[in-house]
Amino acid sequence: MPNIALLNNIEHKDLRVITGHRPGLGSEVAWVLTFAAEFRSLQGHYPIIFRRDDAQARYEAIALLGFTEDENLFLEDGRWDAPVVPLLLERQPFLIGRSGDELMIQVDLDHPRVSRTEGEPVFKPHGGNSDYLAHVDGLLSTIHHGLQFEPGFIDALERHALLEPFALEIEFDNGAQSRMSGFYTINEERLAALDAGAVAELHRAGYLGPIWFALASLSNLRGLIDRKNRRHAAHR
Image (cartoon, rainbow, N blue to C red; front, side, top):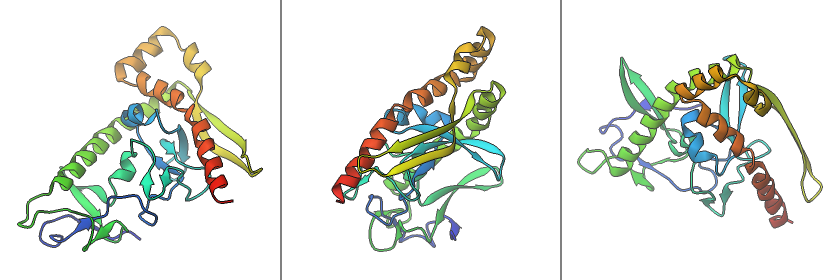
């Protein structure tokens, strides 16, 4: 269970965060949540698809990192093998909190990236915010504003019936098979059939770009399969 605390420079004056990508730091996940405002930076590297969160009865966008639970094919030799790390992973172990109307930084003190002996210091020796914490603050601000935009984007996809179930059956080079199901993609034919008014509405709202970024990102499925094949070959 997470141990969430409001970050402060008294209780957490010696807090450090391990920022690398060695095993055991919480990045061993097959997908990570993303949001429309992040699609532009992710679409050149990761497939962007959608899943349905049954608990909240909402669709949500994800960046696909692997094909099986806890498999992140971008973790290689203690590094992240892509120029962009999805923000919801890069911000770990920090979260966005709220005190009244004010946004605050929270930290999961039991997260494996939290340390007292190694990593980036969160605060300067005399209590000021470190450059690293200023970077985190920027990340969290971007995430917060992106997530504020997201419900409208998802509502527009649903209103125009642009989401369709997605299933993919893969046979890897070693004969292993994987079937992905329970996910959704944007239906390109329905998008193309929208009338001019609907397209203009999506454009004015800033949704048309992320829709095309998500569609373009599906070409990265081939690259993800290649990563899996290389991983299999390396472990023969």
